[in-house]
Structures are given as C-alpha cells and as structure tokens.
Length: 319
Length: 303
Image 1 (spheres, chains in turn green, purple):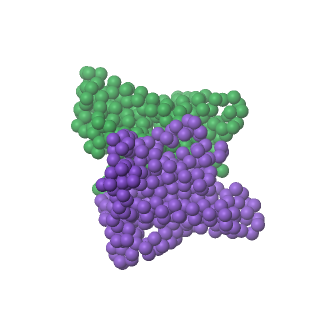
Image 2 (cartoon, chains in turn brown, red; image 1 turned 180 degrees about the vertical axis):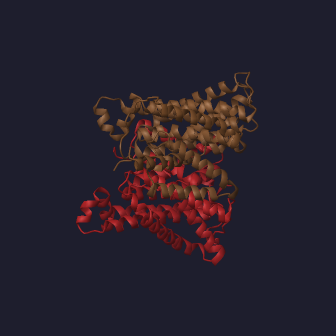
Image 3 (tube, one colour; image 1 turned 120 degrees about the vertical axis):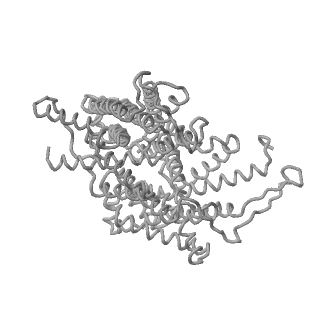
C-alpha cells in the first residue's frame, strides 16, 4: 500500500449561481469574523493554515516528508523582524525579502535532500533545519533565547497604518488568500499533475522522460517560499520572532496539521491547522499538557485516521 | 603544544569527544538494528534514552537501588516498555509506508516528554554516581613533553563510558554477525516470508528486536545519568544529531554505525578545540558533504 489512496482528478471551474452564492457567503463570513473572534488569533490561524497547505505541497503532492519546514517558517519570521526593527523597511518589502530568503534556503535544502528518498529525506531535512536552529540560537543578531522582540508595525507601503489589528486582519486576509491561490494553482496545473505522477511511481515518471529531480526541487522551493510567506507574516502580526518558530517541534506541528486535516487534499491541512491552533490556544494554560494531547492526536491519526478530516469526509461523500 | 594549547587540555577534549562518540555509536547502533528489522526509524529512541536516565535516578533516589543494579534493571524495564509499544502500536503499521512509523514514534516523543515535564519539571535532576567511578585518573605526561610537572587528569567516569560502550558494541556485532540467532535475524531482514516458511517465528523476532533496541537506548540513558543532569529534554536534541550520524554512516552495517559514531565524536572534539562556535553544527555539515559525494552514506548500500 502506498502513502496515498486514490488519485486526484482535475475539475473545471464553472461559476454556477449556487457557486456564486457560496462565494458571497464565504466573503461575508471572512469579513465579519474579526468582529466576533479576536483578530490576532484569526491572523495567526491564517498563517498556520497557509503554512500547512504549503507544507502539504511536498508531502501530499510530491510524496516527500520534510521534517524541516520550521527552518523556512522561522527564518522568514526572523528576516521580517530584523528588516522591520533594524533596517526599518516597510512591511511589504520585509515580507517579500523573507519569502526570497525562505525560497533560497529551500533551494539549498532541496539540493542536498533530494539525493535521498523516503525516510532518509525526512532525517536529512530534520538535520538541516536543526543546523538553522543552532544558527538562530548563536548568531549575534537573532537575540538567542529571547528572539527579536518589540517589532513595530511600520505603515504598509509607507502610507497604510496597520498598527490597528482590524486593518491588519484584512491585509493578512489578502496575503492568505493569495497564498492559498498559489497552492491551488500549483496543484491544478500540469506541474502539479507531474508531481503526483512522481509520487505514485518515480521510476515510471523517469521512464516517461521527466527530470524528476527538477520537479522535486521546484516543488521544494515553492513550498519553502510559501512557508516563508506564512512565517514572515506571522512575525509581522505577533511582532516577535523566536526560537519556537524555528525548532523541530514546529516542523512536527505542521506535519500533524497536515495529517489531521488530510494530506493529499488541497485545503485539508488548513482545517487541520485550525484544529491544532485552537487546541493550543485553549490548552496553553495547562503547560505541558499541550504536548501530551498533540502527541496523542498524532498517534491516533497515524493508527486509525490516516485520511484526515477532509480526506475522510471526501471518502464518505464518495466523490 | 598544538594550536598553542597544552597537551593535557587536548587530551581531555579528545577523551570527551570519544565519550560523545560512544553515545552516538550506541544510539545509532540501536536505530540501525531496529530499522533493519522493522523498517521503522525509531524517533522515540531519544525519549527512551531519557526514560533510561530518569529510571536510573528514580531507582537510586526513591528505592535506593545502586548504579550497578540499574545497569541491568533499566535496560530490562525499557525492553519491556519496547515490547508494549511494538505489540500495541507499531505492529499495525508494518504494511504501510515506512514514514508512518516515523510519525507514530514522533507522537510518542511528544507524549513521553510531556509526561516527564509534567511530573518532574524541565530543570535537571542531579545523580550521584558510585564512588568507584567518581574522580579522575592522574596521567603523567612528562615523557611526552619533557616537563615533569605536566600531568593530565582523566575523569574516570568518561573512561568507563568509552570502555563499556565499546564492549556493548562489540557484543552486539558478535551477536548479530556471528551467532545462529543473529543469522536468523539477518535472514529475516532480507526476506521475512522465506524465514517464516522455515518455521522461525518472525513476529516474535521483530518484537524482541525492538525491545533490544529500546533496551540499548535505556542502557545509554543509565550511562548518561552519571554524566549530566537528568532532564526531560536530554534525548530530543541528541537524537537529531544521531539521525545525522545515521545518514552519514548509512544503515547498512553494524560496524559501520559504531565506527561512524566514534569517529564523528572525535571530529566534533577537534572542531571544538579549533573553532568552538562550529562544534554544534559540524556533524550536520559533514552530513551535507557526505550526501553530495556519496549519497548512500559511508557504509550504506545503494537502495
């Protein structure tokens, strides 16, 4: 049995009246949500949703388990914090820079890691990200254990004031939707189809003449860049970059979000991210209980619930 | 004098390097044995090592059981724990992709560490090692440096770790490569169906292999208890380095993992002498170089 059950088919996008109504409803919910729920929580959740979907490009669609995605997420958050605080850049430049940094790191990781597959790939990415962690711990400009704190939200493009959480919510919403759109377009493209072909059978893809390593590397870079977008935006929101964003636990968390939501589904990981972030929000008061609960969910997911929430729903509806 | 450093300092650093290497060797040996038989990368190896150290501390502090008895009892207890995990959880995953084994054992790490942090806090607990292993051995260096006053103090406990690790590694190698049981094990690694057809109970062998691997992690934990403060997080960071060690060595051979472990401990020590800031990452850098030059690892076979 392979990591994945069933394939994925391309469906055409048609704007029927019912679809239109659904879109309008979604937009209304997204616009009114920050008046009901604390905006900072919502923004953080969106960052992790994007992070999980970006991670899933690797695991769900290329079949490569990266255990080092915190390196991209965390590096980007450090870059944004540093660029805003020390260099005084505007937020959009800082975030753009962080995406570039994450993509470049992804390229370096990819060049080394795609030389091995499966379990070795996971161990290599984990080891590489631990190297980045030590760098963040020891480098003179990352603030060691304290991280970079007290990052101010400079005006966006130099004009739009985003120190207000509500304004920032809509900015983050745009970034988030853009990120998800990129994920969606990547999956539903010829490139995405070839990735799936590689996932199902690498030798077959090679025999069909595809340069498998190039595709894997490109997927890695896209995934890293989007993870960077998520991490950089998060630093802007919480105004802190710290070691939690870059440690191996974070790499593990994003795997759990993806597994829980349903790997191999486009937006399942986002659902998983919401569940995990909400859980952490409520359990944080109980100290290390969070870790135990997350561990238990991990074990249950692996043993009984491998399709994840969205995957399970899709299987029940029988699409 | 090398790098303008006294010989006694160099000697001590190399000793520490060898002793770290002993830990790398023991842990990567356990990982390799488990992977060979179960095709599972045991992420919980570090947590089991931590449990070994805690159990040693509990035995002395709560019940008054000595270090020497711990050396025997703790691996047995961890082996039993391993059997429990294999029977209850891991065996359901053998038909699935290998990555699920990694993910399951990662979940176990979070649970185990969480439970220990909850019960003991994150700060360290001190362990009193037996008097026999405390103190340091005085080694005169006058013959080497020409100065009668040059002496080197070798901590006995680190020497003990190196010696006992070497013995365990050799015994494991002998057991797997030279005995009848070991030959069954190697055969079952190659082709479990065929070995089963010869009437050998492969599922029990798999279970005992995992138990042996966790027992080895527990034994390493006992050794660590006498060396450093016992904390819930002592295994997590170590195991990631051991993963890199395993990637460098390749999981093809028992001797390969042992040699790679000791050698990398020494290399790390040299780097700590020459450029201390890089000592944390040198093993990862070596891993990158090895992957670029010889992707299967130094002792690995191309899959």
